[in-house]
Image (cartoon, rainbow, N blue to C red; front, side):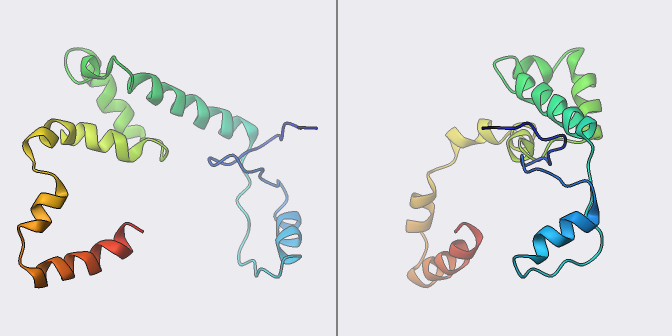
Length: 132
């Protein structure tokens, strides 16, 4: 049976309220716990989820309206308050205008193919650890 936990972290994992209980639970698996566990209340989890929901709604078809006109000031305030980590990369791409640049840039494979062989090897060595 599924049970609702009183507190969840931003990734959906249950958060134990007592740091000692968290340390004991983790220590059973041979892990070393340093410092105190950060307990979050269910109110914090609800607030964070509500903020994420607002961002997801903004990122829908109405996104262009948020970038101009009176909504732009609200967008600016929300960005300054913090963008939820779940949508941060997508939001920064949109704010930087990356989707508008994509049609003008040649595909990655064409750019790499135009490089000399030794440069391609260096690119491949660098890309693998960066994008596993």
